[in-house]
Image (cartoon, rainbow, N blue to C red):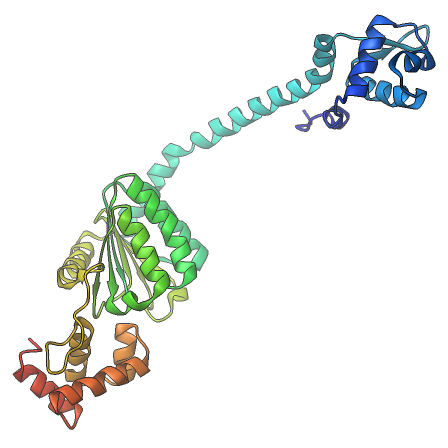
Length: 339
C-alpha cells in the first residue's frame, strides 16, 4: 500500500470541462469516425482547439484510443469507474490503517489509567521541569477536571502569552460545567488585557475577585490536585504537582481564606479620599508598611511598580499627617484602618 493517490488521476481533476470540451465530447459521441478537422468544422472550431479538448477528455477517461485510429467516446459512468477506482482503493486502505492505529492507541487506555493511579499513589508530590512539560500537565489536568478549578493569580496584569494560553482552556472548562474561581491582585484591574480576559471568562460563568496580597500562584483542580511554582519569582524553575491529602487540605484553606477576603472584580474599588477610608490597595500597602516592608518588597508582593508604591505611600502619609513610615502605621491603627 502506497498510502498516496495516483498523481496522474489526481491531476486530471484539475481539468475543467469548459464549453468547448463538452461540445467536442458530444460530437465524438455522435460522430466517432470524424477526423479532428471534420469535427472542428462541425463545431466551428479550429483543429488545434479540438485536439486540446480531446487530450483533456482523454485524461479524464472520457475518450479512449480506437484500434483503427482516432477516438472512441466513453460514458461518464465508465470513465468515473476507471478514473476513481485507484483513488477509492487507496482511501479504503488508508481507512483500514487508521482503524488499526486507533485500535492500537485505545488499547493503551487501561495502561494509561493504571500508570496515573500508580503515579498518584507513589508520588504525592511530583516535580515537573520545563515550560512545555508544565503546560502538558496543566492541559491533562484541565481535560480530566470534573468539578472545579480554583486559581490564585498574583502579579497584577498578566502577560499576553499567559492570557492566550489560559483563555481557550478556561472557556472549554466552563462549557463543560466546571466551576472556576480566579483571584487576582487589585492591580490587575488597571491592566487592559487582563480586564478583557476577565470579562471574557466572567461572561462565560467564571467567578473572579481581586485581593491585595496573594501568597503564590496556585491552581487547584477538583480539590484533589494542586500546581504551584517551585520558585514564585522564576516560573521557569519548574512546578510542583501536589496530590497529598494533608497538603491539599492546607492549600484549599489558604485559597478559601484569600477568596473570602477578596472583592468582586466587577465591583468598583473605593476611591481615594482626603482623610476617608483607604481603598483596598491602600489598605494592603499599609499592612506591608506597618510590617516594615520596603517599597521594593511591597511592589513585588502587590504586583505593581515601585513608582506606584512610592506615590501611594506619600499620599497615605499626607492623609495621616505622618512624618515617617512608623508613625503612619501607628496612626492607621488608631484610625481603625488596620485590624
